[in-house]
Length: 266
Ligand SMILES: NC(=O)c1ccc[n+]([C@@H]2O[C@H](COP(=O)([O-])OP(=O)(O)OC[C@H]3O[C@@H](n4cnc5c(N)ncnc54)[C@H](OP(=O)(O)O)[C@@H]3O)[C@@H](O)[C@H]2O)c1
Image (tube, rainbow, N blue to C red; front, side, top):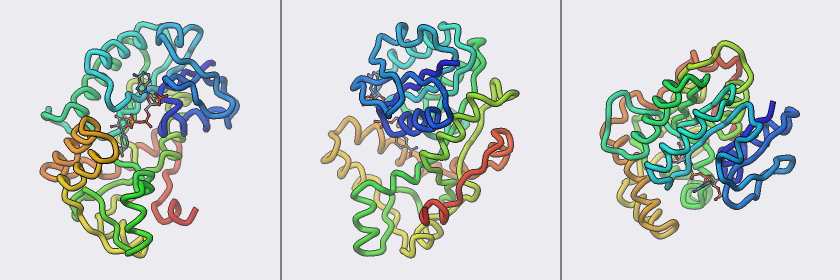
């Protein structure tokens, strides 16, 4: 079994690649820089060549990949003859169509993979605990005991770590009986903003999404800022139960998701 981990030079794919290597798998890591975790064979493209001899694929799509390129990657993976694809949508997907490009391109990619005939497992995490390590979140948390994040205070969120995403991905790649499942993965409990902040001994502040977008513009430029902020603008208006925990996912995968207080203590 040779596994191609797409995005292995990034945060999510990197966590998946490290876990697969630790479990003794043969791992090839796709990304432009080639800076993959230790023990991973770097491949920088083209994608068709990277898939040669591969039996399993862990797929996460880069944020700024053009929609036509997303469709092309999915077509190449689906046509490659691999035995299983695990697609991390890197967000939950709202049940009905939206005007948010990230949601809709991931919805289309999921639908195309599931319809392709290649055994596919779709993993849909909500929001990553690792996002809280960003300097603009971690800084105020440490200095003022204020957890400021651009999600409504009353939105219940099953926060998940990259490590647990990696555990879910390895299970989805290797466990029998999961083919063509769509799993809303996430932590074992949904926490409101104040509940999350309390776990850090802090108070919660629902950051204004426009201010969040402005900060991202300074850090990463307007394109990244507008793509990311579009999801948070949508959540502020329509979040509902989109980010709630689904206990059936842990059962189906045969894993335990880490409670937030354990992640903080680790
Ligand atoms: N739910 C959440 O909390 C959350 C948080 C963050 C991100 N996300 C989502 O996660 C997804 C990935 O986010 P990200 O891009 O910020 O992750 P990232 O950690 O920056 O990783 C992106 C990966 O894709 C690779 N990549 C980028 N462009 C590529 C290209 N044109 N060809 C080949 N490889 C390419 C990068 O390789 P190189 O670096 O080597 O070029 C890297 O390995 C996005 O959908 C994003 O919206 C979700």
